[in-house]
Image 1 (cartoon, rainbow, N blue to C red):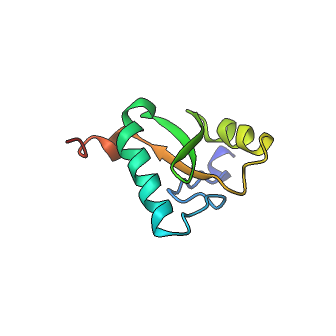
Image 2 (cartoon, rainbow, N blue to C red):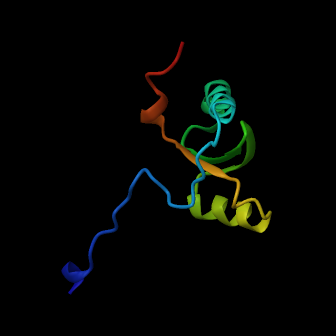
Image 3 (cartoon, rainbow, N blue to C red):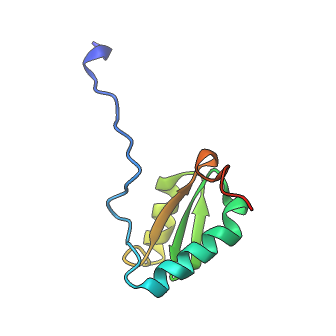
Length: 90
């Protein structure tokens, strides 16, 4: 019977993620990621205008923290997986 249970589909896009609205927001977010990604490798981070709102290895836990802080409507969630950042040093 276990074969009838479908496997979960994991995507890189999270529906609740807010995209930066302006070029300045994109620049601030990219600057933060370039400066701090090594500190948070393997974790999810929540950002807003290039500022860290929170970080956790579990998306669900981070989502709950951000929701509890009433910041869910402004948070951009980014997964800093090691393979995404390993070739971007320098």
